[in-house]
Figure: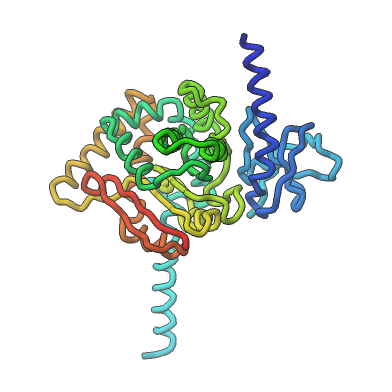
Length: 85
Length: 286
């Protein structure tokens, strides 16, 4: 039962995530975000930053953003960089 | 008078003005801290108190905080289909009440298909900078049977840099949160930005008591009783010391109302509860 509720939570989270990408904007640039299912994160293309979604909760705090070094390099394993603002 | 002394006078006033402007940003309770450190320090406070946050609220206010939040929600006048943002609402108290109120409104109204659709369109965003508070909130939602509600959306975000687009919200509430923000003006500006024209801003916060004897009783309660209870119940005296000190450092009712008006809001009013222990400030975006 624990496994099933875990799967349910993931499904709900995935469903919510795609809606979120429509509603939320990048906290720094206020530009639209793009959902990336592979890394389960929201991408701000205008500044090349990805915001993780942890436990179904998107972390859209500027200091949680991970700078992407190239458009394709979404598996960037760099430690989170603080965005200066 | 010589130009030099006029210049010196101006510079003195300027630095006095600057230190006044920046005093909230560099105050952590009664301590002075670096502006860039404040956010982290506040974060540590709430990470520490998250699990006992609701119990402590009940204890410290004798359960009254529930009434204050009810009052806040009734001032908001929630409606089905609304898009609402509750900032610093981590454990979900205000959001749950808004949802309950909307479902109450829907039940009372004459039902038709249009109303059901509206109900589904309701979106309450709970935004908090602290993930622990959000986790506690989401767990409480599940306990209340709201775990699968599509209307409740949890987002980790910064009140000073909101992740919502311009003019997207019908309502904005911040309950017991604005005191913890480093730059109040930025939070107010962001609140103004995300509200639609016609949107309402509501802030519930601990404020200043001026009544002579009551003030002394309140000070005694704040500085002698609360940190002690924090120590006994939450095992964290320091955090509750910060909380009571931060209340004293927050601008007074009139000053805060001025700040809200400066952010662009109209019809700015405030209502004192319990002699000023609590104030609900409200404003409209036209």
